[in-house]
Length: 161
Image (cartoon, rainbow, N blue to C red; front, side):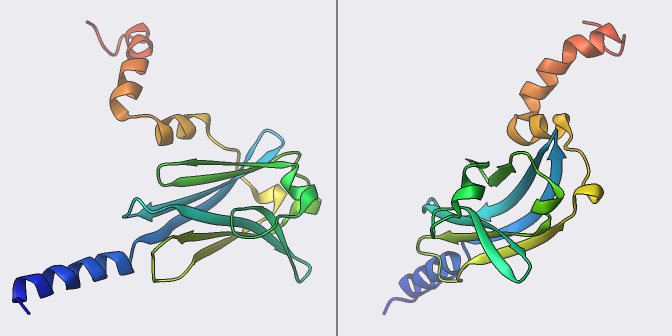
């Protein structure tokens, strides 16, 4: 076998073997709602499947999923949004009864490393409020953010055009 082809095949297998990784799992309060952000890295264009669940009182409760069947009472109170490298769960009308360990599980088709799983303990009194600016920064290009902030900077005499 040609050594060049062998190296190309080996590099392809190594890249496919590590296609995804959960980089960060965080939680915050957005008004009366819980927001759980699952940031991940995906090096392929393969489809992503996910599961958000909660573990409390030695019981796993599936909230939103493309892998299994979610619990109806939690699914009706929740929403998931998916954007590039961010999976975001919102649980509406979050109360102390919803406290527990929240789990983000990801699986990418064709990734042979298995499911990626991260968890975070959520206690209502210890949650920080979600910053509105962080939502803008996460989902907006820096150039657009700069252009939108120019009038504010002008009003404060930081920039003169």
